[in-house]
Amino acid sequence: MKKGQYVEVAGYPGSTLGYVAEITRANRYFERPESVSEYEKAGKIGAHFPAELWEYTIAEVKILGNYHNGKFLRTFSPPKPGVPVINADDDILRKFLGFTDSGLLLGSIQHHEVPVRLSLNRLIQKHLAVLAMSGAGKSHLSSVMLEELLERRKEDGRVAIIVVDIHGEYTGFKHDQKYHSNTIVIDGKSIRIPLKKVSPEMIEEWLPNLSPAQKEILRGAMLSLKKQNSSTGYALKDLVNAICSSEDTKSDSSKLALKRTLSRLRSFKLLSEKGENPNLMFDVKPGKLLILDLSDIDSLHKKQIIVSMIARRLFNLRKKNRIPPYLLLIEEAHNFANQAESNEAISRRVIETIAREGRKFGASLCLVSQRPVNLSTTALSQCNTHIILRVTNPNDLEHIQMSSEGIDSRTAKSITSLKVGEAIIVGEAVNYPVFVSVRDRKSEKREKGAPLEQQALAFEENEKRKEEQVEAFL
Picture 1: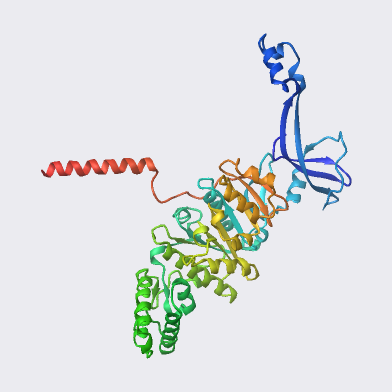
Picture 2: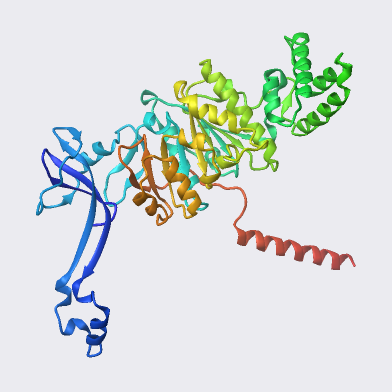
């Protein structure tokens, strides 16, 4: 018997199921260290006493419920003493935990040969959070989930997938022989949106330090531009000219400050006159993967504007039923939906809006984070399923436990001892917390950046080459 193993006993009615929460091994011969020390002087204690015969193991089982005539019932009385404890039946266990035959295969239950197949509706409709420390396997688990979504049959129901890729960890899908035809990768530096599709409220959200006077001037200029160019597009320079030509001469200082602020927005090269990339109407399709590769963008402000812009456009299009139901996966989500009140938390508002209202429209979120304590409590609490890999930071653990109803103190203690590739699933997707061994990924793993050893060797070789060239020149 092992910790985390599911067991059953004959109960009334039916069978009582539970899992091994704690397990201890003891021996009465070794309860008094001073006595053992004295006997050990004359040789091993086993030579004098039958110590091995007194060894015993105690497993503490948490009862989950009863199974009777195909139904699961609450347990109102403990099992009888002396009733044999056996390994839980695989078929009963599968039904008891809420797995489905057409679900997403993420791995298998630890200590059981039962595949973990989670219902698509239960897993992502009410949003999902993947939480773990760096190097614990967040991206691996996310890639496994993306594989399952890409392989899903049309008759089972498919969703579109959009990934905000911060480190270029998912670009391997585009180079994989099996998945490349269903994958589009957009370089973050090539992302563009026509200015005519941007509202004054969006720009005010992107530039949170605008004064009331600047906001009024901005709205007036954008309204004027829209009336004059209703059938054509206009660029950011046209907006600046419209601000300069505004008849309000009392706000010249506000105009000048607004122009300076807009110059920063112009440096990001996100707003265009007509060009749009990605074109969400055409690139967001059922069973297709759209990756926004932001790994070459250094500015966090620019990244937040992109996430805010894309997330808002996706949500608005979905509410109008112009794109299919989708899953928006955001890596390093704590950078885009930060808990702290700050003018730099540009994309937090739209993420929280989708978290609160998205399930009604088929707009789902998957927030992936290594710092749960910095993640918006509003967004995290709306994620009804949490997949938690290894976390050791006590502040993160406390934040996870407070935001996840399915985690008790005993389960929380187990999080710190998880190995790479092991996870706990709690919440809407499963009937009870489940310890999972995540399966191997099928897709090609391709990350940007060489391993540290290769980078160090390449640097020294390059420096040596430069020195040789200088010596040859001299």
